[in-house]
Amino acid sequence: MPTPRALVLRAPGTNCDAETAHAFRLAGAEAQSIHIQRLLAEPALLDACQVLCIAGGFSYGDDLAAGRVLGGQVRLRLADALRRFRDAGKLILGICNGFQVLASTDLLDLEDAHGPLATLTRNDSGRYEARWVHLRTAPSNCVFLAGIDRIELPVAHAEGKFVARDAQTLASLEQGGRLPLRYAAADGGEPCYPANPNGSPAHVAGACDASGRVFGLMPHPERFVDPTQHPEWTRTRSDAAGAGLALFQNAVRYFG
Image: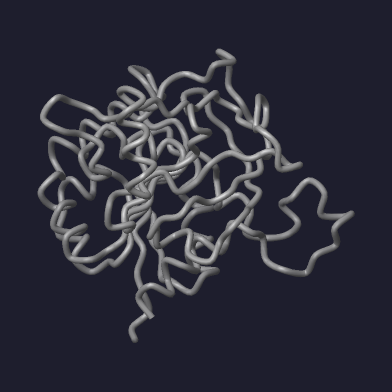
């Protein structure tokens, strides 16, 4: 099979596109970082790619709200192209700010006739949270989480609290396998703050569409693709790859 190609989208203020492209390359993909203005001018660039990733950072300085400006550009000017991309069986990943962007579009299917089913809002702590967290997966068909039960990754965000419209909507998303990644406590107990760094109900750390091919998550898998990136690497002395690499390998393997 041809080597899958990944397009990593960046905007002014994005700061994780180089690391994300590197992660895709380590996983066996061809990867290119591309500015939003170029994609707006040439949406046909998507045709030659199998994966689109919206990288983390602070797109447009998060001046209106996290991911809001870039989300508006995607929604208003790339909606048709990205809908075709998704419907062609390709993959879309949004990491941190990228998840915030996806949540403001219809690519995650988090809308109905009455408006948004869920949104991402400010952390309960009222401050920017940067720390390592433990995560567990919930039953789903999310392509990126295949074969992963538990994982440890870093988070870095101020607006990562996933809030559903109401309790019934949250339950429906859970039952539909749409909330496949959750914050977890290291000892297996209830993940109170800071284990749940933002206060998300049901400890939601990521959401996917019904197909499992569009996935957004607040933690940063691209920041743990090498064992030396973990703060305890000198004590664990593991020669294995960083755990976050598995998400990118799953994306590549999907097209294998």
